[in-house]
Length: 192
Image 1 (tube, helix red, strand yellow):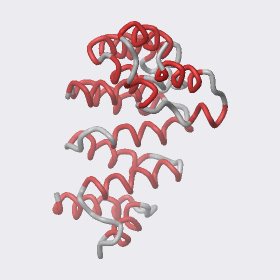
Image 2 (cartoon, one colour):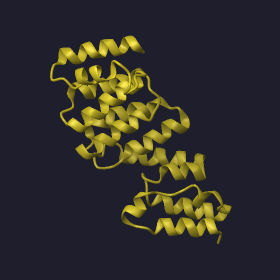
Image 3 (cartoon, one colour):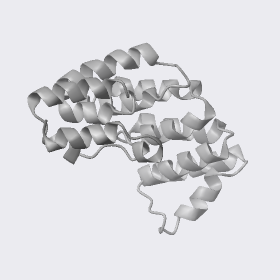
Image 4 (tube, one colour):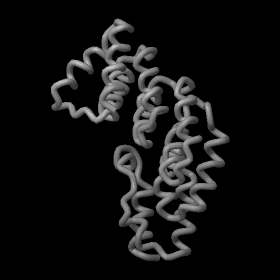
């Protein structure tokens, strides 16, 4: 066994916050082809959290696995399916999976909604992601989800937190007034 495999196994067997730190490329880069196959199979047991590393090891095989599990787990509000969808979009540019991320958002339990918003934001910004963030801003009651959607919308519009308009628009987006939010959307659209 290579040193890389030993490093991987050490990380694989960790628990708690050490496990949450995830894997490093050094644990995967020096693997032999046989070790890569074994590691790939071990990482399958950690889906969807290991999807990034599956793509690192074997992108073609990882894509097939990600699509299979995405279809099987889709709309399960307790599963982190957005992770699979995000990586499929990143590796293929297939906008269908970005749309699925957006469609699946209402199904997630509250704690996962924040992460789903971030995952949508990590896909390329376009009209669909902007419309999604605006919809979240108009309808979301969770303050943390609302705050993330506001920050991501402003960032996608090219506004830096240090810009003159950022705080004013952020306040407008977080307003209780729908009219104020809509006016902020119109102003933001003028920037993009």
